[in-house]
Amino acid sequence: METALSQLAHSVASAVSLEGLVRPMLDLIQQATGLDSVYLTMYRPEDDSQEIIYARNTGALTLKEGLRVPWQDTLCRRALTENRLLTQDVPNTWGDSLAARRLGIQTYVTVPVRRLDDGLLGTLCGASSRSVEIADTSLATLRLCADLIAHQITREEHAHSVRRQALEAEQQIQRMGLISEVSRLCLSASRLHDAVAAVAARLEHSHLWERVIPLYLRDDGHARTLGEKDPEATRLADALMEANPEHLEGMLHSDHEHLIFPPEDMQWVREQRRREALPEDGDAALLVITSDEKAEAAILILSAHDLNRSPDERQLLNSVANALSLLANRLLDHARLEAANLELKHNALHDTLTGLPNRRYLIQELERLLAQAQRVDGAVHVAFIDLDGFKRINDTHGHEVGDEFLRQFAVQLRNLSRMGDMVARYGGDEFVFVGKPGAGGDPAHERSVISERLRTGTRGTYELESTTIEYNGPSVGVVTWRAGDVADADVVLARADEAMYADKQARRSAQHTRHTGD
Image 1 (tube, helix red, strand yellow):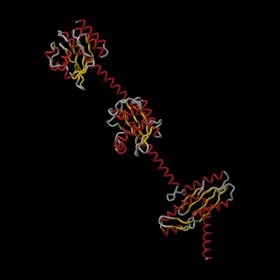
Image 2 (cartoon, one colour):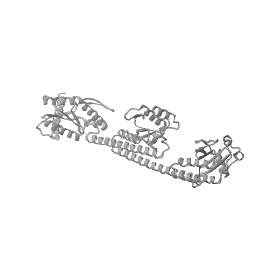
Image 3 (tube, helix red, strand yellow):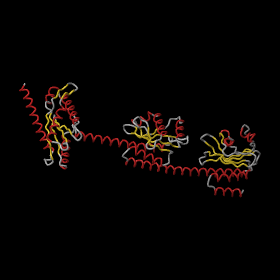
Image 4 (cartoon, helix red, strand yellow):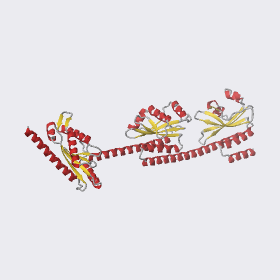
């Protein structure tokens, strides 16, 4: 007995695992009892079964490691229920046991392996096809071994729990690091697609998933890969979105999470994974990036494990989607602000009725053209245009017709402009034309040509929405500014205005002469 206890003490002291502890114990128990087979079983509560973990077989009776049977059918359950730890006549005691009859068990002994809270871990058992006398000291050794095994299992479970907690903490740190890096990428990004591609690359580099594929969503809702083409990935992304249209809509208008998982029927996902040269057993998810207006982009995740059942992983992926969606909205707001600023700038420099440059824009541009011409010893033609008879149009037909007439008149002026020319609404019924002289041309002749072109081009029939107006053309005064003249836009415009009034007087005189002649 002292030798057996010495062997037991040595196995306990040197064991670094449950197997390292149990196998020497089984040798010791077999030697002490003379049973054909001694073995350790584990109770599996998840399916109410018993499994042989380690076995020592030396006689006619052989029980294999890995054998798993329903707990209800075991001799162990009967023995523990009846508190009959040792049975030397199994056929007469449990004659209805098919397993005992098939194996030919005559002697059977079992000791429970229990936790400190008395929860059943398994059993330490022995069996023989012949009748074997089991001494009380052998039973005591079995109980001692069962206690040591329970202690080792508890210790290993605790160590496993500590390792698992450490791994979870490490994974949590990794997830936090990923979210931090994704946030940094989003804060520094100026284009959504660049950010989505960079984030996808970082996620794939983490090796948490098999493949991470960045996608953008076209206006028709279909996915396209960013970078290298991947038709299989785009088909899978489209299929996920088509299978979950309500969830996709909920991302835009409700507080739905930004992940789309495959439906319960996974067969089509397996086929897709097979086409991607990935193992069939795995999961997929689509991480969708949205702005206030629409779904903008997505990241396809292909995973070897079940994504849908991991709350921490879902939280990580939703955090990534939220960061990219915030970026999408920030860029959208920036684009809206830029568009609004451009509109404000345009409105500040353009006439709201005709769309032509307004007086402010005209002065700025004319000052620039005068300075440019001054540097190259050049010249600038400026024509002041006044709509004769416009007051009568307003008084006769109303202001709405007058406004429509001004808009059509502005269109005619714009059509008469050539490359480098400018037309602007100076105010009310007054417009200004600015143009550069031709190389080596006669300025007086060019002024005459400009005046005639502007007058003739705007004269004629105006088909308005509610009426038709026959218009006889405006008064036009054209002046030429030359290098060396006063480079002041207001001065030049005043000269052109004087020329226009001279033209207006000449037209009135001509009209008066015609009427007098009549």
